[in-house]
Image (cartoon, rainbow, N blue to C red; front, side, top):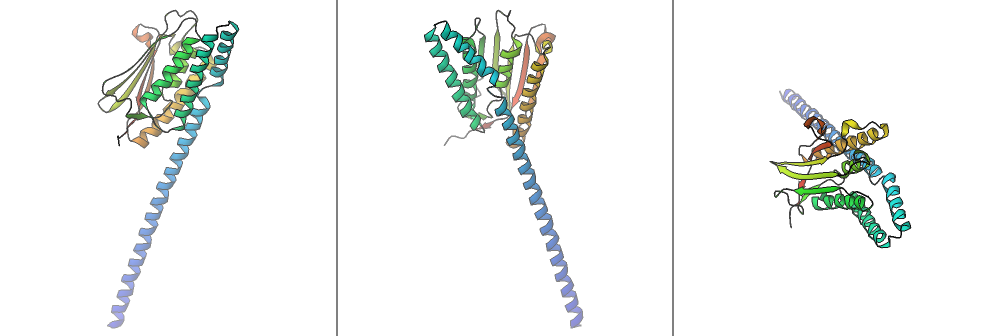
Length: 256
């Protein structure tokens, strides 16, 4: 009788040990799988951010800016050259500072865009009329978003959408909260996305769009918000230009 009880007890202990081992294996496997997914996600983030850094402030823009500055100096417009150089250095400083941060306040992101447009206007014969607006629900000092989400699209407008014969160039950038979604609408009156025939222009636009789409997906997952990107030609509405609609990832900064 004692032997039977002993055998039963040993069997029970064996089942407990086996069960415990199975539980440990399942828990460990789940832990390492989650860790692997997190590492993979972090790697994706790093690669995407590296792509972004390689495309921001392109050599084309910098060479163009230096060429404009050289022309201003050769024309002996020294006050204008000092103003241009000052704006360029401020833009580069803001861009570099923003790119080091994972999230920046909307005010800084809009400031970088405004400095970029001002610089472009300073070197242009015909300046672009632009409007930057945010609705009353947005606290520009409190709402955070990933940097360089909007600027690649603005750069593309200047580089590819406006033609020489454009007299009245216009850009409108509007940010608004719709329920819990942060929506940005960028509208220009250029030639429109469907009128781009140059292959290099298409590739540049595609690259910016692809990188932004990647970043939107990554940050949507990380911040647990909805994101989207939609680009359409305004020709279907009987107008010239392009309209870009972004549903942006964001985080609300808590005040101390």
